[in-house]
Length: 312
Image (cartoon, rainbow, N blue to C red; front, side, top):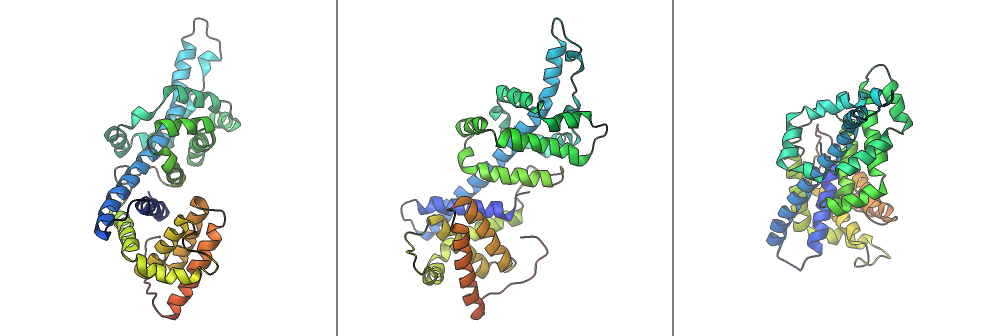
């Protein structure tokens, strides 16, 4: 479920945190970094599941609305005929009936972060959406339509809701730092099958990759900077954005020490992360430096890559 890009972002954030600490020995850096990285990964996954919960609870509120309207002293015909189709959304129920999902929610006590008043507000906004009206009047259920209405709740009503985002920053631990990761995971969620193991959102192979990447970047700092420094013509390394330098070091390490990841994939991934997390010029900067370093490494026959079946 979690992608290599998600992992790269968490490694970058961990390295950034380590860089802001007082100078400590390499082994202590690795030990501290391991703890920080695990915490960042786990927290991001909790926020991802909370995002799913907010989406689903908004859809399920239609049953509460229907019951309350039917219970009025003098209900209208409209009150007695609330369309509750979305409460039976098939994609949602595939997830809700996934035992690993319920166990994850219970294990991490994620229900505590759901605000009922906000769920009601989101529902009242939902029923005004033209897409919702089309959804409720469609005669048949289609997988694409079932996903699309949930995705609308997440993207339009939750993610783009500034007031709700402020609420999340105040009430959800780590949301300000990890909201972009949660958004990436939600994007992947709507592209994937509902048959997800929510207790194992990070495979052993990807968790190993995360820690190996972080440790390698720490261990090879001096060598990587020897390669990077000459490419910073007209740039003062101390004035280059710290995130950019970290991404360059990560990129160089991937090119040299991770033989199953193609160099093109490495460069493209770090360009995109730089665009999202650093300055407007960072994508172009990271692209230029990594491309130049790669040419030198290939000229010296230092790049050793092998084919792999899994996607990077």
